[in-house]
View (cartoon, rainbow, N blue to C red):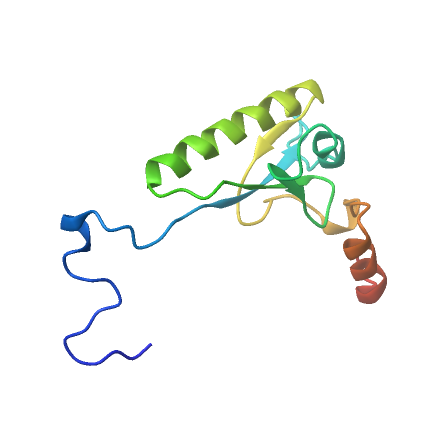
Length: 132
């Protein structure tokens, strides 16, 4: 975005005045795995059925869960929210005999072995893309 010389999107004295210039939140995607082999393991839909939709959501495959924090004014609020959500997921995973992990991609996961979750959007993708 271009701004005129000498101007800023955030006023220089915003911090001194305590002006709130925005909010923040975080999204984290976690996967469920078998505790002995660390292979991806289904169970996200079972966990999601026990939680409000505002707390967690499913992803394309049944071993993934997305966690979205609420809206916060300070990073500390986001951090506390993430920890709380992770604790809930850890407890659910333990009851299912699973462990939780998070990474960009699962190091040994094979997409051909994953079950697509039962949501209309993802089932349409499965039919459209074919290779899923």
